[in-house]
Length: 304
Ligand code: SF4
Image (tube, rainbow, N blue to C red; front, side):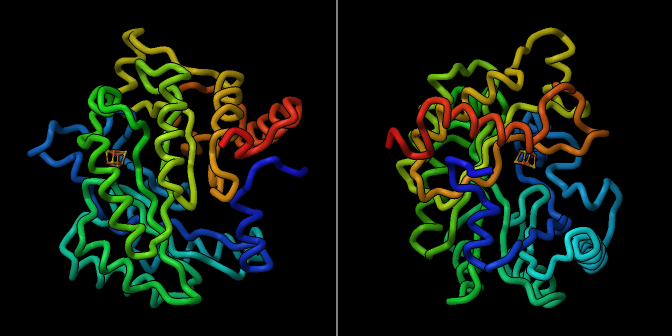
């Protein structure tokens, strides 16, 4: 199917001439938003597993084991050859810079990876960490940072206990852009207290910064997250598939056509993913969003 937006898979195929795959690893990090000197508990939608790759399950494996296991699985399943190393779980810049360097070096030494991708929080990036990440960039080797924002609205960030505000996000984006590091921004649609207008304000604010990639998630609540308790008390409602699809179509129209759309839904492993249980899968969401845009005679960036 032709998609009226720039999909990540089409971008990777253009770049590498074939499919390329992320090897998502847990570098053994924690998250500063879970530290005792913060409000504690982390973001209210986050469970104890952070954002660990589905390939790894929920058990501990060392870095070497994770990488070998994931690559073997993807080679077998997809006949894959090109892999990108993705420090995915928790906050992958949360540590002393020399320890971060040793860890990234170790991971990169285990395979001929084609990119380094590091996931983190806006308040866990400073000049030193940004310089370290930039030091891995070469003409034929890109470094990407995935930055969690979720919403540009300070009141929402407080409500979900993000532990940072919009200013830290703007600063982190600047640090990365100054060093030529590619930026992917994570957003969540359907957060408590947000309506369509607020979500689109977030998209517009992010779009002005021209990130290379955007990931959009629907609000999904793992059963071991603090937000799940709110849900059980009947304090939350959140969008179902149809509403999420219409939010996505509206958002894509105001996102620059060059920005890579890396995700449109949440992909929490099923044992952790308690509600909503009847959400359409990501293939179906992508197809339906494309159909909705086409039915409007529209496409990514039409309203930019
Ligand atoms: S920043 Fe990420 S890992 Fe940390 S609490 Fe929030 S969602 Fe969880």
